[in-house]
Image 1 (cartoon, one colour):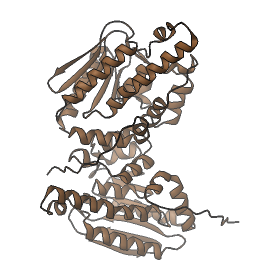
Image 2 (image 1 turned 60 degrees about the vertical axis):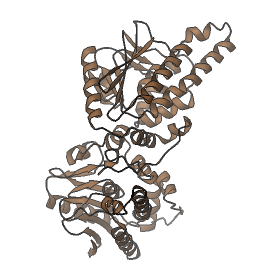
Image 3 (image 1 turned 120 degrees about the vertical axis):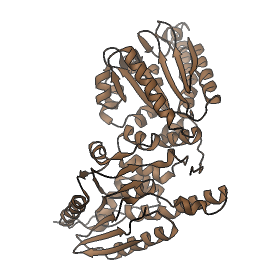
Image 4 (image 1 turned 45 degrees about the vertical axis):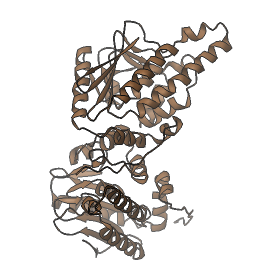
Length: 239
Length: 239
């Protein structure tokens, strides 16, 4: 499912196993629980890396579980339930009092891509894996908070259109070139290494976690509002 | 402190002296007064260049003055006071009835960077000087109008993240490449020359100043709203 470990100042959240890491209510709650743990244990210099084992970062919501409801109405209800459960995960990441990195070594699709995009920095493989929003292909509209996330995280309107309206399967080199990810590397080990390197460098800045989170929320005001995140003003100037 | 001169159609506002040109209430008061003078003396073909002497464009608010309050609460109050006092400076620049150019020949940090960014065109040195939003490093949250300015002036979400959330010290060549400044040149004299040339070329268009200001405000609607700027419709069509 998912695990949390600490290496020095780094929190490492891992989606374990070789499966598609589908977000069903259980996995979503585990994620939320572990992120709350990260928040509680945060200190100056902390950083978070979210990563996954196997061919998939995550393939999104568990549509099989939705359909196991037995009826179309039941499936729709279960899908809505997952979208509602997932919103606090995004809210927690947006207000996490430390820098966050998504180390994307496999396919990040739908809610899986959304999870990755909710991090401050995205590092991806060049040689394998895609970013993909398949909702247009499977006739699903997007929740408001996912629209807001894409709007505020990805400035380029044509990139947003290609991802959301065209259902483009974006590989690492294009994602890097078009500014969707910070950097793309050739291979799983390189991505993990670069993510750790970046996390350590960001941690060395010893930012004040609560101020960092406030500045982050200020960068994404519409998303913050939709997620129900409040604002605080800090004036703890360092000499 | 700061001076105003006129060379033909070009107004030149200069931060004088070799110091950091920190914005304390006195300097902010002078700036506002000189900008009002520029506005009052504006004619068709006017343009403004804001520049500074020495190693700094401006290093932002006077934190020493804030801390001289003697207590943490007093310091926070003085800081909020300067943030509030500076808002009309940004408003005056946003509604100035002529093109504006910031000639950045030294470091522009925090409110100093904000002042530069409040101009229509930024020209910078390649070889010296950085643009830097220090707030994340000194544990200060970002005022609402600062966030709005960055959001509407800098379209690239990852540039905004690098500047505000990562506290990147951006040199001229990167600023030019990533679209934060219009152009970067290899020396102080070149920057001043290029700024004068640009100001004169823009002046030659003989724009109607009030209409120019309205169009500018229309480009930055959320910022204009936060700054309390009203809108007017003009139909002074030229044949």
